[in-house]
Length: 77
Image 1 (cartoon, rainbow, N blue to C red):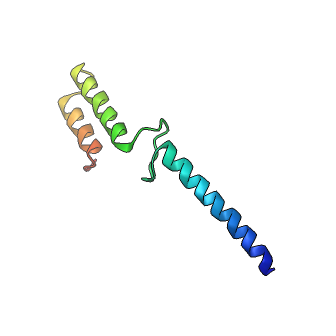
Image 2: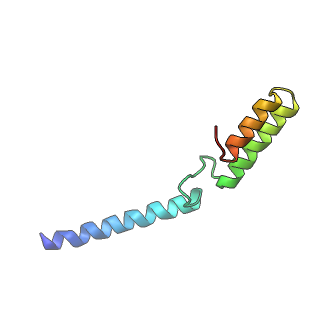
Image 3: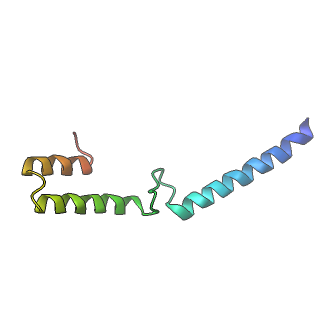
């Protein structure tokens, strides 16, 4: 039974290394990978750009814009 533990640990170690390498390559290791492979800051930046555009085009009131901007910045809802 003891001889079976080492190969299992070796396989688990290789799996952990492969998963870590793939996550680092695809989107970073910050815990919130973006499906498109962009860094987390880029996602927030593009969300802000979309919000600004919708406000500039008149789709959002000033109150709604400020509320959504607060949410994007991590404030209270």
